[in-house]
Image 1 (cartoon, rainbow, N blue to C red):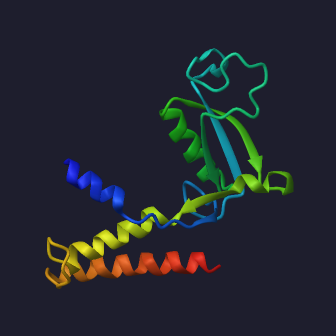
Image 2: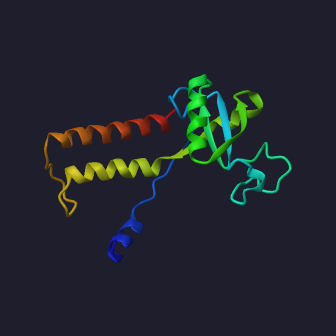
Length: 159
């Protein structure tokens, strides 16, 4: 990326809207009812890269997190995947009143909005940014996907 492109990127308007999103199972995408925390290595208290290094109690420590629907096959899949990545299972939190806040995250609209706009611009505009439609039948699929994403963002912002 040359200096001119960097300046253009910096001059793009920053349109952001942050909203809450409910966590879903990292294995099957159903509603999450359990949150699992993982720590690096087999002995995280001795692993310098782990947040549990040197601590007596590591219940609240986490190097990586995952959410699950609670089904045994999903939990087993997540645990196996994390083990392959070098993490050991630490704590599992159920979705109950004191921990409800742990099952919500935030998402920013800006990234998805600009990605959708750039996809549309790539098929609806010429290289100078002047409106014109060019391309093939595959472009219709890209345009439909981008429009769908914009509609989803709009709907989430108005909930």
